[in-house]
Structure formats: structure tokens, C-alpha cells
Picture 1: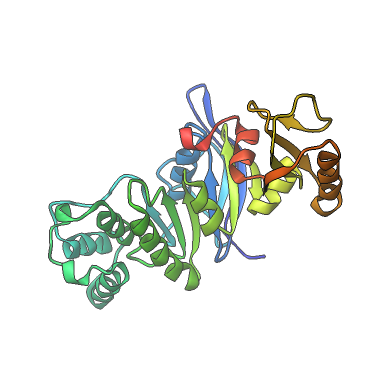
Picture 2: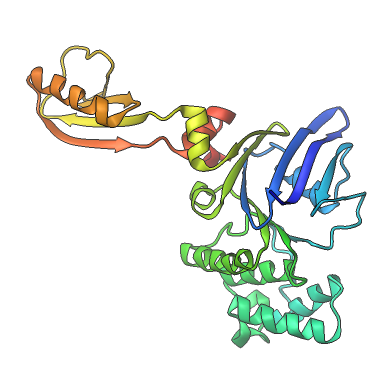
Amino acid sequence: MHHAIEVRDLCKSYGSSPVLQNASFDLRTGERLGLLGPNGAGKTTLIRCLTGRTLADSGSIRLHGQLLRRRSGREALGLVPQELAIYTDLTTRENLVAFARFHGLRGRTLRDAIDWALHWTGLAERADDLVRSFSGGMQRRVNLACGVMHRPSVILLDEPTVGVDPQSRERIFSMLDELTAQGASVVLTTHHLDEAESRCDRIMIFDHGRVIATGTTTDLIASTLGNSRQIQIRLDRPVTTAVPGWLISEQRTGLTAAVDDLSQQLPGLLNSIHAAGFHVVDMQVRQPSLSEVFLRLTGSELRDQ
């Protein structure tokens, strides 16, 4: 397995307050890794250490197998921050030129990069319009392009779709799909669970400066909550007595139970309900969710962060 980034035992403290505590993880080549964690978990400090904006107290970072030392050797990294890091009093083209030069592009290489970025963002017809006249979603696209003008092989995205509408979110991820299809590796920090589940190959949950779980959504659910499914059944009339193994709803017309093997256990559960004289009005089988995993591991609701 080739790794774009390898982080080992990264530690960082501010005064007597530890922010990163032996954080370790790998980003595989061509992978999109979702980074989830409550506010204050250390995610921002981790990203800053990866980019060299903050120096870790100890530990190591390897980029494509090469050990990074202080602030050098990070040319293959691209950072797209949560805050809009663009000049709203400049045009789209002027922003792209400025950031291309920041990344060391010159001459024909710079011109080709500008043409690519305008096409990639779908903003070629707005190339000479001031960015301040753009919608939030369009500004996000410019922000994204400015962070990857040098076509980095590893991209660090910090909440790239914050504050935009669903259509703009879809457009941004279509743009990212192009980059990953070309081999780019991505770390995506997000508070949108649907983004992490649908857009990432693996998910890393980070809390108190540590990586506390990594895996696919299926893996995380199985290792944290087990393979049980929740069955919710609505009956034709209220339940007046306790039913072993079932939780009764406040309205007393609903029953909830967890089963490990649906095909084996469900028939017996339904038979017991019918034998007690009840009729099933409605039934739902619900898989455990990533939200439940996050809550179990961190004690925090991600959407409340």
C-alpha cells in the first residue's frame, strides 16, 4: 500500500495545554479521507502541522515517503482553507494569477494553469468580473481553484462547502472528482456527515488530539456499534404490559428492538406479536448510522459543533 502522507506520533502543545497527542494516521495514494471531530479536537492544528504553518513538538510527517523537515518539502501539498482566502476586489483571473505566482508558476505554465482553472471552475465567462459580485458558491469555487493552481498531488480541504447551497456543494464535489480521478489524494475536514459518508473512501474520527477510529462507514459501525439493526414496529393498539426485549414508545403503540440477524430473528418477533393479539400497522428496519458512531466515540453530536 502506497501512502501519500504518513503521520506518526505527532504532538503539539501550547503552553501546558496539549493539542495533539501522539496523532498517527496514513493517507493512501488516490484516497479521499474524511476527517471528523468536535470543535477543539485539534483538527485545525493537525492541518497546520501538515502544511508547515505550525511546527509540531515531536513526531514525524512523511509526504510521498520523504520526511518533512520544518517548513520545506511541501510543494506537493495544496491547502483550501475554510475562510475565503481570495481577494474580492480583484477579478477571477487576477485572483488566479496572484495565487499561481504564489505557487511559483511563471510564463507559459502560469497561462496554462489559468486556462485550466477557468475551465475547471466553469467561470471562464466570468473571468474578468470582480469576485465580490459572485454568489457564495462561486466564491468557493474560486477559493478552491486558488489552492490547487500548482496541481498538488495531496489536497487538504477544510470545510470546502460551508455556507453554500446543495447545488453548489454538488458542483464543488464534481470538481474534486476530477482531481481524484487524476490521482490526487484528499483530506476532507467536514461537519456534514452525508459528505463524509458519500464522498470519502475512509473516515477518521479525531478527538482530544488523537485519532480514535479510522475505517469505512461499515467498518466503523461494526467495530463501534456491532452489526445489529433496529426494528421499529407500529401496532394497531397500545401495549399495556412490558414486552421482553422490546422498548415501548411513549404513545405505547410502537415497539423498538435491536436484532443481530434479521432473517433469523424477525419471524419469531412477528409471531410473538401476533400471538399476543396485535396487528402490525407499519414496520421499519434501520441501520446504525455514522452519527451514532460519532456520538458513541466522542460524546458529541457533530451537527451541534
